[in-house]
Image (tube, rainbow, N blue to C red; front, top):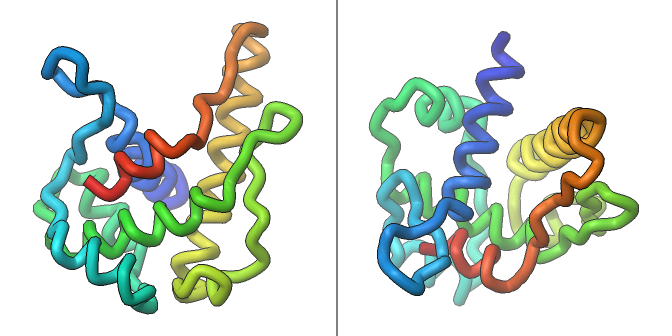
Length: 149
């Protein structure tokens, strides 16, 4: 049950950036939670090391609890760094990274994102078994940029 809750919350974090905006012509997603953009810019500019307890944060998101804007900024930067190394190969998301050190995130953050990517691939396989036309959304520059907003 804990794993399902964590998966759900990670998907919310990952996919909240993909949700469509209600303003006309704006297709970049809007985050479900407030993000401190000054922290985002600092972490990107200075390549600040990120260590946040993804499991606690995921539980809070899944429960609809208030989440600290700085923690959300850290998660978004970690996701941005991680998904900058993800591509679709043979119908699955694949990450070229071997460890969190390569993108200045802790091993627990990296491991949580790796586990989430595996779960996303399993969910994609299940979708594909029901709908053979199912295609994974691309991890492109528009998606990555939306993670930072």
